[in-house]
Amino acid sequence: MSNQKTFKGISSTALHSATNINSEDAHLVPLYATSTFTYSTTEEGMQRFESKDKEKIYSRWANPTCKAVEETIAALEAFGLKDEKGNQLELKALLHSSGQAAMATMFLSNLKAGDAILSHYSLYGGTYELMHKVLADTGIDIHIIDMRNVDEVVKAIEQFANIKLVHIETPANPTIQCVDIEAVTKIAKEKSLKVSVDNTFATPYLQQPFKYGVDFVFHSTTKFLNGHGTAIGGILLGKDIEFMKTKVWKWFALLGGNSNPFDAFLLLNGIKTLEIRMERHCENAKQLATYLAAHKAVEKVNYTGLISHPDFAVAKKQMRYDAPVMSFELKGGLQAGIAFQDKLQMCTRAVSLGTVDTLISHPASTTHHSVPKEERIKFGITDGLIRLSVGIENIEDIIADFEQALQGL
Ligand SMILES: *Cc1c(COP(=O)(O)O)cnc(C)c1O
Image (cartoon, rainbow, N blue to C red; front, side, top):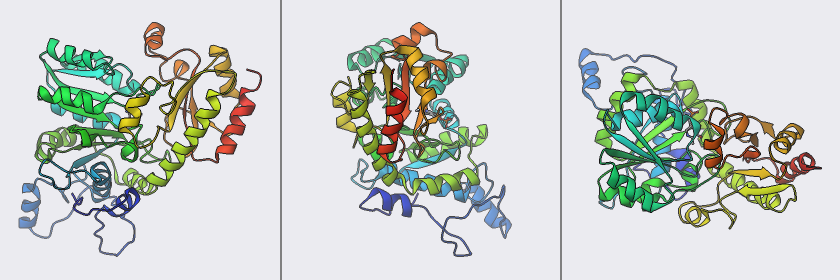
C-alpha cells in the first residue's frame, strides 16, 4: 500500500494516496475494464503468480482501478495513526461488490463452525440477517447484547468461551446509538479476541477505529464514501497485512466478492470530496436537529449532538463532529409519519443514506418491516420513527421543506 505518503489533511490524503501508473499520462486513474492481464514472458507470469499481491493477473483477484480505491480508503483510515512500533500505520484493504460481500468475507475468514460472534442489538438490517440467516446455518453462534453496557460485554465474554470476534456498529442504525469502541476493544483484547467495526455511518472523517486497536474496519462504500448514490460497494480493511493477504484474500477471491472497475472509478471520484461533503452534511444535520428538537409536532430527536441523546458523551469522545444521520419521532405517531413523508417536496423518499441529497425513510414500513413489532420497539424503532440522512442542499431549503411538511401535524 502506498500509505507511506503522509499528508497534513484528509482531503489531500483522499486526493493523492492512490497509485496512478498509466502509459498515457492520464490525469485520473483510468477505468481498467479488463478481466485479465498480459505478461511478456512466462517468467514474468510466474513471478506474478508467486507474489502475495496477486496483481496484474486476473480482475477477480486484483484490478488497478479497484486498487486505487483500496489505497485511498486505507490511507484515510490510517490517517495520522501509528502502529505499535511508532511508524505510520499500514493497512491492507479489499474492495468488494457490496457492503454485504465485504462483511461476509470478514466473518467467514475469522470464524468457523463452533465459534461465536458478539455484537450489539441495534445493527444494520442486512448485518442482522447475515448473522441470523446465513452464519447461524454454518454453525456459528450469534450473541447479541446491549454493548453500550460494558458490564454486559464482560459478562458475555466470560459466559461464552467460543466468542472469537466482537463486532461493533457505531453510530448504529436507525437510533444512532453509539458503542464505546475504546472500552469494548480493551475488554476484548484482554481475552485476545478480534474486534471489527462497521464505520459506514461515521466514515474515516468522523471516526478512525484503528486508533483504539481494533483489527478490522468495514464500510458499505455505497453510502458516504461514494456520496452520490452511483454504485453499491463495500470495503474491508485490516492491520495484520499478512493475514489480509493470505486468509482473508482467500475468502475474497474464492467467493468472488470483488468489485468492478466501473464502480471503483465512480467511488474513487466520489471520495475526493469526502471531507467537504462531510463538513456540510454535519453542519446541516446540526441545524436541522436543533430545528426539529424545538418543533411542537416532534416528540423526540435521536441525534448525537443533543444532550438528551443517551450516548452523547461516547459520541463526543470518539467522533470528530456529530453524525450526519439522525432519526425523529412525531407526536402523531404512524399516521403523522406517513403524512409528513408524503408532503415533502424537495427531500427524497428513499432508503439508503450518505448521498448528497437528503434522504428520508420510515423504518417501520420499509427497512425494518420484517422485524416483529415487539423486537422493533425494543430496538427503539417505533411506528412513527423517521430516519434522515441529511444532504448538502442549502439548509434554508431543507428547513423550508420540513416546515411545510410538518404544518398541521
Ligand atoms: C448499507 C449498510 C451495510 C450494507 O452495505 P451494502 O452496500 O448495502 O451491501 C452495512 N452496514 C451499514 C451500517 C450500512 O448502512
